[in-house]
Image (cartoon, rainbow, N blue to C red):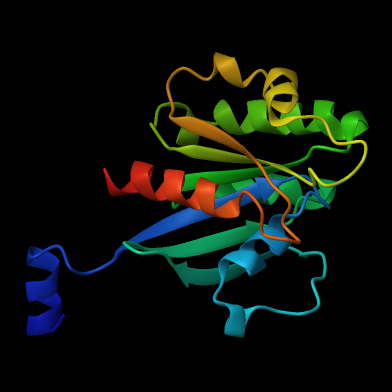
Length: 183
């Protein structure tokens, strides 16, 4: 670390790096959300389903995010736990128009919250109730009820209605996450 790096760190000028896990079932919009959070010149035009995981980096005003975009396909979900220790924040994405799989999303969330590497940590969790633009979408309040988010008492959490394709609701979520991770 160079002298300027040390000085900027002491003065609080250097961006804090936060490792964020982006989780949720397949086809919930995780990769699209992460793509939208990147600078416009770094965004991909073609979004394809994530196989395994990918790592993306982007910056906000005071944070540098390293996001682990984890595949939500059933056969890959057991890999999530290998990254729990590294995670300092979680983005959990729900397809708010897929009522049939809301139960599966709740089961995966419960498994996550009860994992030993997560259970006793005050790790902030940002929920995106995504695909709000679709006709069958339920409100973020209804998603919160279906996932029983009110039962999460030991971790700060926040839910945002979002439309990842248009980028709606994403900045509100990132602002909340930034506030919780700077503390």
